[in-house]
Amino acid sequence: MKKCQFCGKPATVHLTQVINSEMQNVDLCDECAAKHGLFEQSGSPLSVLAALGEAMFGTTNQNLAVNGLICSNCGCTPTIFKESGRLGCENCYKDLRPLIEKIIENSQKGVKHLGKQLANCTSEGNGNAEREAPAPQKHICKNHKCACKHDHKHDLGSLKSELERAIAEERYEDAAVLRDKIKKYSN
Amino acid sequence: MNELRKVLFRDDQETTSMPIVISSRIRLARNLKGYKFPRHSTRMELSRVAETCKSILLGCKLLKDPKIFAIDSLSATERCALVEAHLCSIELSKSEFGAGLLVANGNSSAVMFNEEDHLRLQIFRQDLDFKTMWLRISEFDDYIAHSTNIAYDANFGFLTSCPTNVGTGMRSSVMLHLPGLVITSQVNVVINAVQKLGFVVRGLFGEGTSASGSIFQISNQYTLGLSEIDIISRLYQVIISVIANEELARKWLLKNKSLAVCDNIGRSFGALSWSHTMGSEEAISHLSNMRLAVDYGFLPQAWRAGLDCLLVNVQPSHIQLANDKQLSTEERNIQRATAIRKFFEKMPSLKF
Image (cartoon, one colour):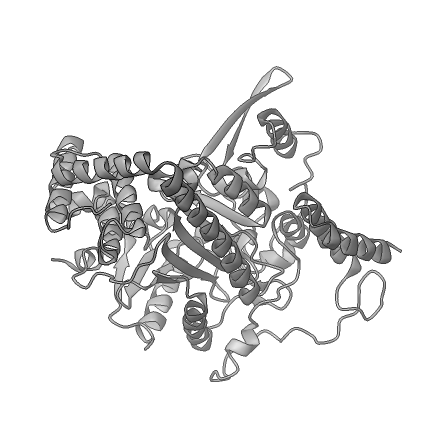
C-alpha cells in the first residue's frame, strides 16, 4: 500500500497531476487530504491540486527543506523521516529540532505542551528513576526578552491562524480581538 | 474456543447503547525512554520493549482479565477480525515481530505495543462519558509512568514517533450514526464545519466521507498546544452539536418524508429477516436502517446494543472465524445471511 507523502500513514487518496509535461502522483491519507481541504466543497479540485503540487514538488518546497541535520543517537535525517513518516527516537526531537518545529507549526494548535506533566504522573513513584524536570515556572520571551508567558514569535503564528479560523467561521468579534493582539505583538 | 475467539465473540455482550452515538474512545501514545521508536528498532530492541511492556501491563491491577496476543502468531483473518472489532489499528495488524495487543476489562481497555509507538493505551465506552474515560485512562497512564521511564520533554510533552501525535499523545474519538444527515444531503456541510474546527472525520471502514451504514468517526486533529481536558471538551461540544443537527434532520424526515423512511426501514427489515445470501456492504446498510428504526421507536430500545454487535459480527473475517474454516465470498454471504436470519427470528415486528 502506498504511504501518505505528508505523514507516512497508509494513503487512501491518490491524485495525479501534470507539471511541466511530467506526470506527478500525490498519495495522501484521509487526515492530510482533509487538512489540505480536499473534501471541502468550496475549494475547487484544481486549486487543491495546485496547492498540493506546490507543497510536494514545487520550487517553494520549504516544508521539509531542512538539510544537514542528523540525529546523533539513531542516525535519522529529514530524508529518512520524509520517506518513513516516523522519527527514529526521542533524541530526534533535539537533533532535528528545526524540522520538528516546521512540522509542528504546520500540523499542531500550538508549540508548547499544555497537557499532563510527566512530573505529576510520577510524583508518587519510587523515585529511583531519572525523571524529566518539570517545566520552568518563569519564562523569558526569546524574541523580546520580556517576562511574558509565551514567545511572541510563536504567539504571532498561532494568533494569525486563529484569526484566519475566526474569519472563516464568521466570528468577527473574536477576529477583532485577535487582530488587535497581533498588532500589539508585532509592535 | 481459543482466547482470541473468546475476545471477539464474548458471551457477556454490551447491553448499554444510546441513539446516534455508537462508541467513544480515548487513546494515549507513550514511548519508553532510552529505546528507539518501533519503526526504527532492531529485532532485539523490539523484543526488549515487548517484554518490558508485557511485564508492566500484566502487573497492572487496573486491567481485569488481561489477554495478550502476539500479532505474528495470528493468522491474516484473525488480525482483520481485530480491526473489524476496532480493538486494533490497521497498522498494528500489519506489524510482525515484537508487536502485540492486550485486551482487558471486557474489551473496554486495549493496549497496542510496538505499533507506531511503544505503547498505545485505549479505553472504549458506548456513551459520551469522556470524564470517566479520561479519569480511567489517566490513572492507567500514571501506573505506566510509575513503572518505567517515559520519553518526555518539558516543551514538547510526551514524545511520539510521529510529531502529529506529540504533546498529549491523545486521540479522542466518537463513532456516530448519521443517517438523517446523509439522507438529507447535509452531511458534507457538517463534515466541512467540523474539519474547520480542527477535527478529523473518517468513515467507519475508511472509504472516505460516504461511509458505510452512515457511520462516521470524529476525532481531534491537534495534540499539542491544548490540554487533554481542552481537547475532550472541544470534541464533546462538537459532538453535541452534530447530534443536535442529526436529531433535527431525523425529525424533518419523519415529518416530511415519512413514507420513504418507513418504506426503507420496512424493506431492510424484510431483507434481513428473509435473505439467504447477503454481502457485508448490503448488511451494514440494512442494519444501519434498523438502528434508525430503534431510535425512532419502531423497534424496542433493548435491541440497539444487539444490532451494534451484529454490525461487527457480519464483517468478513468475523464470519470466517465464526465458521472456523476458509470460506469463499459466496459461502460467506450465505453464512452471513443465515446468522442475520437467526438474529431476526427473535426480533419483534416493526411498529410504525
